[in-house]
Amino acid sequence: MSEMRLREALSLGLSEALDNDDRVVLLGEDIGKYQGSYAVTRGFFEKYGEDRIKDTPISEAGIVGCGIGSAMIGLRPIVEIMTINFLLMAIDQVVNHAAKLRYMSNGQISVPLVIRTVTGGGAQLAATHSQSFEGWLASVPGLKVVVPSDPYDALGLLRTSIEDNDPVIFAEHALLYGVNGEVPEEYYSIPFGQAAVKKSGTDVTLVAYSKMVHECLEAAEKFESMGVSAEVIDLRTLRPLDTNTVFESVKKTNRVIIVEECWQTGGFSGELVSKVQEECFDYLDGPVGRVSGLDVPAPYNGTLEAATIPDSDKIIEAVRRLYAI
Image 1: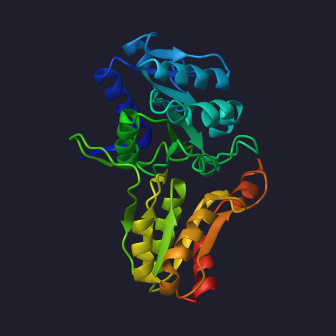
Image 2: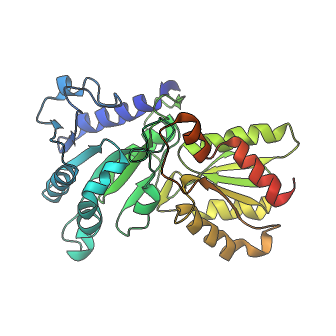
């Protein structure tokens, strides 16, 4: 096992793809000479040259459109959009083209496109740069949505994304690039639709993805001192979604809280709540709970922004309020 940061795991996955397949190209703003806004593509321009590492104009619709077109003619492009907020500039390309071309062509056209982008708040980037739209995108048939929480998952899921023949939204949380973790030296990949039990427990199930997994693990650690055993499940991918792992945990603990950074109204957590309620009603000892971001634009002020984002204390408060444990 090697210890590495999440950004290093991503860099390794990208360099592997470039080394092993001449059809792989990278496109995005400042990924070449500037070496990437989050340093994931550091050194790539010098190693692979401008034919493989394409610095693009500031036009998200153009970047994604170029990625779709090149995927249609046989390349395997990996597009970097600086933040998920900027995907709004390319939403027609993503939703009406990338997601639907295989279906509308009766399988004659495939779009093996990976869109890497940065999600989440907490970095004081204010209202238009701190949003989490991965749940929106997971509602679109034809897209696959990946949300890793640690270096091991980031590398394994990136490998699977690059090999997939359909468009993948690969959402990386802005505050997780420096997270350390062990990564096997031998090659591995992680299938889509396979959640991970990050911590076993018996009293309550905490379900999350991306950065909220870390908040759930912190809450579970605090719970131990209170005599409460919390199980933590990392969804890993929102589409396809592994509900079976969640259901099995709920049947064991009889209590569940869904944790998501996005706003509660219209959030992806609501979809998961309904599925748990439909499939596990007879096993529940109380209501299915949610801990989500507040329904407000993200403040610039750091103290105010922190108040809008779920954390371990808010998770503990929700569990004790709903289940009195």
